[in-house]
Length: 78
Image (cartoon, rainbow, N blue to C red):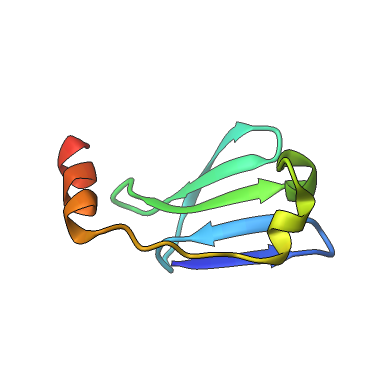
């Protein structure tokens, strides 16, 4: 997974996989990218700073690793 934030255009992108995608727009400024198998490949959020409670959040990304069992349970739940 790769998370990028472009301050110049205020866009946040979360990439799960690097592939050719089809984009589906959820609402103005929020889009989901899907791969050929219709799996989520990325999420784009425009005007990101105004969409978060505290724009300072975008200055630092903290990764939290879920325990393997928790991930397995989430996948099984669909």
